[in-house]
Image (cartoon, rainbow, N blue to C red; front, side):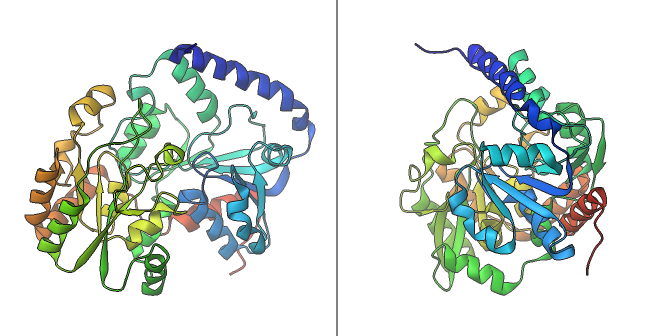
Length: 394
């Protein structure tokens, strides 16, 4: 028997309320002032903004804070224990107790709705996208039951991070209805894209993903769709790499990276000879290693644009996506060449004007009111240190 979308969400809401009742006795435990919990992409990854804030804390106040990470597959991240990080199984009593006694909770998506927000805790929400592209939250066509469940996960923020003035206004204020403090210093995950990563770091990433010396990487990273798990968009990798070689020269490899929402469903389904990079731990490292990004409506276009690397949009379902979700700014006003099929994508690549692209991207940053400083990790880490009463060692 199939359960309707509405019934599914009502069940989720009831389960969340029941879960809060079960764990509520743990709220009698005292909050530990120097305990910090991190979560990334619903506890699937050690990545994105929480990773870079966590590592900034390790640099700025080593050994002063009890840093914990919860994961669905903690065995993949056991190496973090060597750095003194507490690695826990998502949903375990250990992780629940840690969450309910942590002074600071930092996450880039939603918090478990089964966990109460305790008075005296500090919630730092980073989100996981910059700029202002596809609509989220209340500015999409969400039903009331979706909204109630999202609110249960989204409530309780003391601080949000922002990448741009338009993100603050359209995403945080209007879409999420957030009225609290916003730190407009940029996305911590983008610091290295803004400042530039050391050559040896980029070289090591390229070696880990299997690129040969002299090979260029074209990363294909589509976002997810609300009504499907698998993206069979028919990108022609051979035509893509041929066009890139013709325009930029050299040998090219294509790589496929699934969105975190669908990563468990899509692995291996769309590679067709491309490097399968879905399991690679951190998208930002792939952007550092990539020479070109091909995507659609993903906010990774904002991240890549900060390094002024070429980004091409491949959007065969644009009309449908726009009708179902839509955008904050018309997609035709974005500075990234747009194609609806493989032939148009290849033509955009072959005719790419680098000088015009850089000027258009710079104007785009100005229009959105970019707040990227290249030092967002340290700014967020120092706020956590202030809340926890810890001073900088360096």
